[in-house]
Length: 214
Image: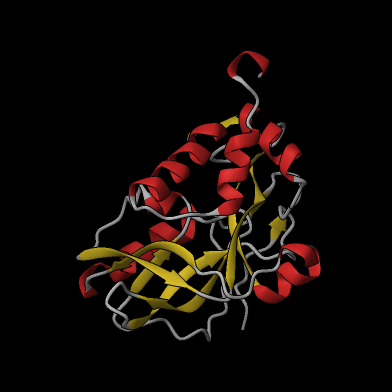
């Protein structure tokens, strides 16, 4: 049974200000959260420990308009979501790389904090994101089930522009959470600190207009 959240096109948000989710989705127990965007450098919730992990079958893309964090309804920013192999193959057949892992941070949440963390994340990931569960591979080669939030192509704010246009949007948009360009640069810096590569993130950083041209 799906969430009762409904899209308010005029306001550009999910009514109820919550991420959408299937109530029958079995949550991981213990609860792990996999972050691949701003959660890589800014968790803002209680957790017991975290580690860098990877998932396969998903691809990070700047393909979700942001009207409440890194942009406004009048000038939406662009933030990351995850696309499955199948979704990417349909949208960008020449860029589908089914064997490429997507790296992020896996957080283990304590039992007593689970309800509060889920409530906070459902609010944080409003505007088109949906809960999903994936298998995350740890550096030691073990796997855990983890919850992630993804904005799939069917949500009203999904937008996958050409890299040049994406870079222009990111360079100029600003929202309540700050400049869109800082979001991209923070993600790129996190990847660099962990000696990880993401061709999409690096391409957008390379395409950013020079400061005097913005």
